[in-house]
Amino acid sequence: MSEVLQLAKELILRPSATPDDAGCQALVAERLRRSGFACESLRFGEVDNLWATHGGGEGPVLVLLGHTDVVPPGPREAWSSDPFVPEVRDGMLYGRGAADMKGSVAAFVIALERFVAAHPDHAGTVALLLTSDEEGDAIDGVRKVADVFRERGQRIDWCITGEPSSTAVLGDLLRVGRRGSLSATLTVRGVQGHVAYPEQARNPVHQALPALAELVARRWDEGYETFPPTSLQVSNVHAGTGASNVIPGECEVRFNLRYNPHWDADRLQAECEAVLRAHALDYAIDWHRSGEPFFTPEGPLRSAAREVLARFGGGPPEESTGGGTSDARFIAPLGAQCIEVGPVNASIHKVDEHVSVQALEALPDMYLAMLERLLG
Image (cartoon, rainbow, N blue to C red):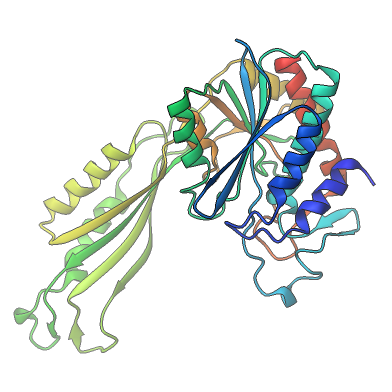
């Protein structure tokens, strides 16, 4: 059994449903200390974070970024095998976290061990940052660690996130940015009353709909570089008492904006609230900022990744800014260039999550090639 397959299995055996790390980071830290890494545990609330570094001096700082927490498996009887007992079937490793992202974490560790063994006096600093709060609220994980880094003056030049980014085969996609995510809970206040006497009531649903229609129909921009246009999507509308003859007194609407670097959260909030005021709504709104967009332009990191992925994916990778969000959104504001490279994402968060054993065993070599290209 290969080293990376063995380590991935050991990590899957630990039922680290977010935010519980379940001992994954201790296992990783023990291995990296033996390779000469300085390991620091940063625990905030119920969340464990591991910061492991090797090297120093004035050279560049390259961080491998990942998470040890996983989403809950759901009903275990729906799985073909226990989600926290790794099993190889037909060339696939099954288990919760196999693809998202314990496979990548295992590959990071193997690549780092091999890199420092081959290059003990490498340029700059190579580091691993792990959290147990990527799949959850993302409050006490990398977001909090980034605050600590700001206070310390910790510089990060390059960041490689191991999120499952490939679409069909390992290395066919290089993620060079992510959209920002801004969520809102809008409460429109009306006056409850009987449907037969609308003149004695004020229907918040009727009032909210024209404003929502304007927000939904708006063409926010035409895209940015490889980013798609900004999108506003309504995810939930709730009103009413359950009776068909009562005009509700309140209407709650939840919506989300996924936006490109044309915008920041402050400007988007201002634009949305201007529409709400223009429709004379009596409203309250609660905003939640998941993260600003980031984009890595041409440079050493993107060039190195493109060259390496072309060797592993059979051709030049697609360079994309699609998908949701990742913890790189907290590292990019530190001034780091960020990319995301990992296994195929087809089964993530699903029943019978799995990763190809062949791809898993190629991952350490892929990450190692990037490390050597940048710091060797």
